[in-house]
Length: 286
Image (cartoon, rainbow, N blue to C red):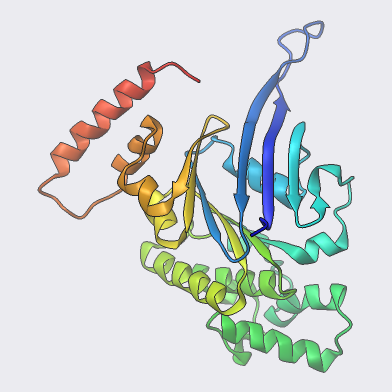
């Protein structure tokens, strides 16, 4: 099957400040030669600590960040050839859900307008058809028509994220970039949102690039997992394989850092984490 999204040898560099005005400018490789694919209807989990470059990868796929080299293709669209304006057809094809739902929702707009705005911009639906579609989307994410006239601050964090998901689904995209979509939510709400995303995927067939730092959450939702460290992809494979038998020391350290309710083995896990952290710090950087 042809991949829906294909990233090949992606490099993104950020300029560092000059120590002196006459010094040559240097660059930090935020993403350094990353390659992966996402198949139609698949969920690829992109996991790593803060600063690993995973969010920069997501922004580059969305066309919000320019690549220095490499290619990002989604279907027949080459994202790296886009100019300052991302084509409308690509915006319909690829959508995003961000970490802070309240920050991504206009607080002056009611839910009907928030979810219906993409429909008004990209489709020729009448006002009545648009409202019917908004109600359909809200019901898909566990809300209802009685929420249409409310503002974002009337909702909890989990409900706000449901609204953001409904808005992302409005144009029936093929791929959604989920950038830390549950990290700002309570643990009990996280599981509800993850289950919602799985249910939506089963109904619509949409593919996900799920970006997060929590390996336990990523394992629950992903078909495959890619592990990033210092801008590089250090391991990629089936979700169970990566979590049960990680090959790279950094992936092993991430797995050892996952919270576990088993109190009896807590000291052993701490010792294992310290051992892995020490060996990983002394290992040569590839």
